[in-house]
Image (tube, rainbow, N blue to C red; front, side, top):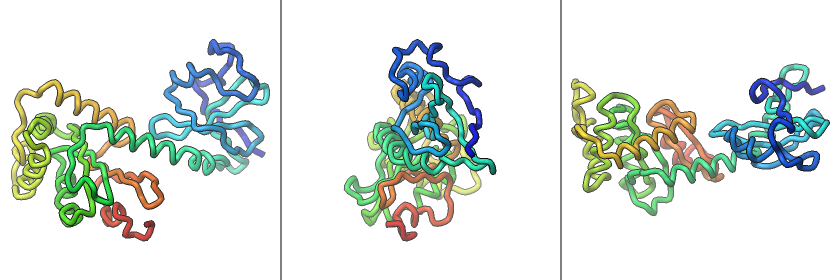
Length: 266
């Protein structure tokens, strides 16, 4: 027997009469206005245990199920569990939203103000949220050299300023440089060559005054990073052989083997 765990919007079921909807036929979703206000993107119907009609949706990077109650006039956003407390529809939900969520992530990344590192026609592309003051970001840049220089990988750095007060000025200096690609490379190399210095003094000098265009670009990058639920740099995003978007934060062992699918998934 399936039980409904009440993870409800605003702590209550979604009453149709309270949402100023146009009265769709039984089995339809809540009003588009309500869904938009909740930031929900509906993928479509999904198979569900428990006898309730269900739809798969997502908000940012969170998969969310919507269930219609038997009266056809109320809905629940929550989790259906069995007598042992197991989420009986988790696999169906993840299967339904994985591809469209990944496509949305990739489209959002492509629209950012990124800095290319490597050949544009490289067979593998990876986006990286990069803070100029992040030592692991600079480690990632260094360890990627063989793959980038051999033409196998293009890194697309999305600069953010989240670690130190000087991060924004350094990121702006890179963005405003005549060649941002060369500026980023010079910064990473200078950072790698320096030892025992304050992070604020490493690499490129921070701009004392930040142009509005650079400030806006950095703010948009940080907003996307947070919307994706990422809280640390570097954060690397790529597609595997199955065209599924993969995300890793930090510098875990074997990161580039995973990016290049040397682990056997390609």
